[in-house]
Length: 107
Image 1 (tube, rainbow, N blue to C red):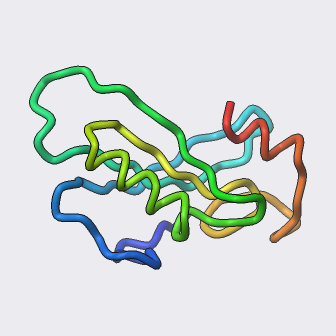
Image 2 (tube, helix red, strand yellow):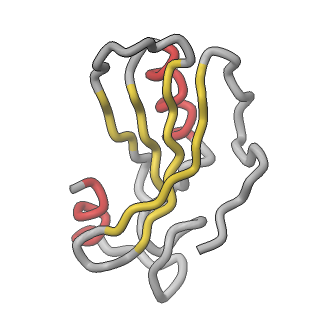
């Protein structure tokens, strides 16, 4: 899986947050692309974490990424992922919709 290296979001990058591209597999073996947002000034403290998904059919470069980045500014570890079949995430056929697999993506 080839992930974009440049900032590809529809919102400006925060200077208070560290951003990393990551991948993970769901239970069906589909590789999901995600953006991990971490507070830059986190020290060694354990932080609460949150997974953010957008409206059905949305990708992480839109609202879910903005929400995840905002939560990282508020000292959460936040991950925004593109659901199966969309964006940089895997799955065939492309741009398909499966409520069951979308639910599994969160698991």
